Length: 415
Image (cartoon, rainbow, N blue to C red; front, side):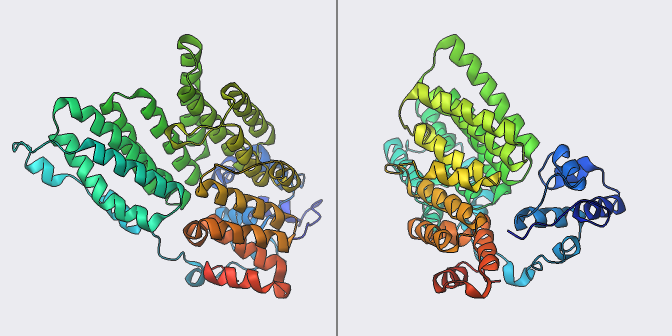
């Protein structure tokens, strides 16, 4: 965070934003869309009602206006050198290559040759392992496993007998869901979108209707990562509405409730990223009601939905809204036992971000180190994590503790 600035006249921050926006020929709606906020939020910024003290939001505004951060706020730290801030090699780079080409061209050329039916139980075990690696944020191992599994499944759905084909398509859908989830967590949004789309297509071929919704959930998260918040909300809202109708007409199975609650969490996240506090809180309450109906934590479709996961998301939503105190209050009441390493690491990062917003440097460092211990690949490769650590270095300045400096060097977040 950077210090507050009074904004109550011409020449102030809000007036500067309005001047630069007009100079570029942008409407308020154009700029708000570019930075992933609402037109109302931007209007309040330009009128001096809404302060902008978070460095990440300031950078979004500067990028949307095509200027350096210091042109908006002279007291802000300068933009990092792109050559110094480029992300490290991604453990999913090989998986991206796998996704880029058609993984079953050989099977297409030899469709006339009848092959022995593959061992679907073995493939099913491989899919379970892939999800375990995804939940553990073990992306290097995940890439290796997928390099063999995806071509095998893509070939199987084209060569297996009719009875086995539906099951093979179901396994393929779940595999692409895992790949999409991993890409989204590392901010590889375009690849996450492709993998989600393939999972939806495979799920339809399998005849497992709820797997279509699970793939749609992954698609919504890809839209969030792309900052296409209108699309993310449309995808999630359409799915949630359909599930609501189904729950009312044919009963509320735990699987349907898990999906319904997960979509409400996506919508809450969209509103939080857009600065829409009231709607974000409304969707969180809807997710809580669904979780109370279930009464326990489950892992349908690898969503980990349940009462605990709802409150984990409540922490993230509060941090995105800048309500660090609320985030820490919620976090202090949570028992993370039984949650995956990925979910525990993400929770630790969000709590670290909350401490950073309050300039609790030591507490923030402690949570970031906890996240690194749980999922080092996530902290090292995830853009948001690296940005949070870099911002913490800016807050600490010369007084940054050795542990923070060492962490920043390990994740390439030195300022």
